[in-house]
Image 1 (cartoon, rainbow, N blue to C red):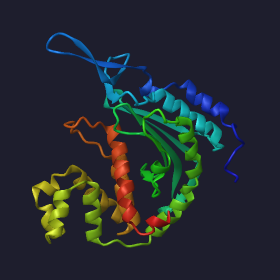
Image 2 (image 1 turned 60 degrees about the vertical axis):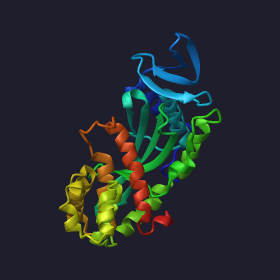
Image 3 (image 1 turned 90 degrees about the horizontal axis):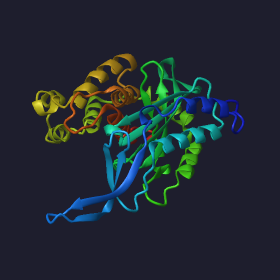
Image 4 (image 1 turned 180 degrees about the horizontal axis):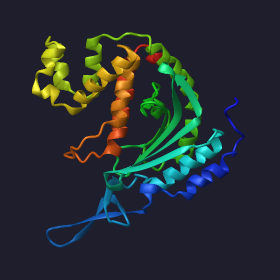
Length: 315
């Protein structure tokens, strides 16, 4: 393959990334036994451990004694090492490290411009790798592959559930290095997904299917329930509980834009979903869900929703 270099040929380029440090994840953690005091003033050791940041003393998570804490910096080091071994071309590789929930959650994203395919509308999409980790038990340590669409900067979600092939719970059996090495085996999906995207660009999707898909992604159970009762799309959108769902409203607006550019196709619907998962930002902090954490959650939602698209099982 002409776009693959010799093993360990990326040493210098990866070292340049290492010299940049760990970005927002540049902090140490410590895990200690959790203790509590009884009404009689006696200190009792719990069966749980607590992990905290040593720089801010922020609590990151409470876990059982068999839970194996994976430091964000170790996850980042492992990711860089597997890239170094992968043989991928790394000219102008871009690395993005983000931390959420006060440091308990982290992801690192790499984009590889040298591994690019042409997508419908003569746009291009470059290979991306995403690794995520958490100290609060929300995410297992896991990695997945995707692509970055150039024109709209949407992070395209691959159909295949790569996460299931490369996912480890935080237990003493966790082998981060082995898990990371598995990711190399799924990088060939870029071409397969490109072919499906091209097919989608010529497949029309009806208006009701679009609305149901968006309502599913927005987790608008109220709207889906009203559709089952027989209400029309217009009647649903007149109901405050429906149109006050910010995710649903955001995607409906984006669908109008992509439909104009790409027609009423599954490709336009797919880009509507990935635009939402990539760019949606809410000022609502009621559930303490920050932008970085929401990006991962929305990406996982899109991967689930598009499994019902035509040709999804062929990926």
